Length: 374
Image (cartoon, rainbow, N blue to C red; front, top):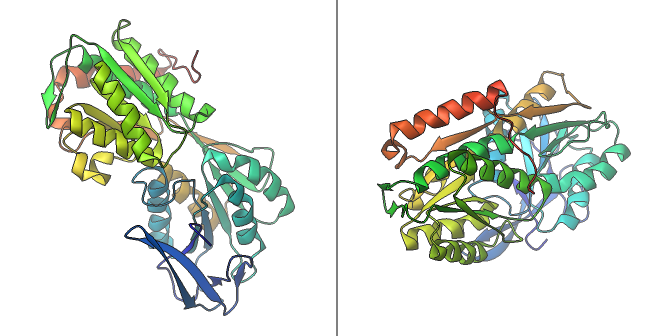
């Protein structure tokens, strides 16, 4: 299966396994699982049985980059783990290594009869095109999609986020700090430069929302601040992330915000090497990447776990909201600027006060945050 893997979740005994690379979940079959350990892939086979007394069986198809990104996919994992704890569901996971694999994993869960999957969770905007083809072929199968929408399909519940709102807050924070002398942890600003940066992963409309909000927030603080922007083309290339970030820091950037998945690890490495600040995304990365907590100023937390948990809860309650789109922003606490675990207490109170003011203004509609770049 190469890097593709169905990873057995530690759920209720009796969850069915997945039979090899071409078959779907099967009764009493063998589950072939590919795992990575110490940079090497190992394949193990375990005997599984059909049937389950679980409240629901859930299939998880993760975004590219897979688990262990300390960001987007790991947030989804927290959501399904919370659902397992609270509702007693079982789940199986698929980690595609290329977008071409999305359709086969979506179909494999949908075709399964032992177990029947009550919900197939499709994590990430890149799965939309595949799901648009898959879902109509399985009208009795419930799906959920994170980061895009298919409201025309009655068997798909869509969850979106106002990433631009949370990114505005991060931009506002970066803009306020780059214009003053600020030192905390292992980093400091050079206020004469008035320069910050943004590193995106794949150049797509969704990631442009992060960029647009960030740039608007920076300019809200000071129109004269320079914002360097670059895309790595990947959500899993930390070396490229480090290369881009190092170049930005060399030009004088004080703070770099990334929306690049596991590529962002390279941004943190560059920040640490250069004594500058970085900002995480999706999860509180000062906690998921504690090695770099002394340079991670904040994170734009996107509560993917809320979307996953809510969708499972709806299925368990027999209240699946197919054909609808749920959007989570600042007002719904779907996104938020969360200060770093180590550095948050060092951020001046007047800066925090200004961020709270802009947050309230966004929620009230007094500040309209753009969703596209020029």
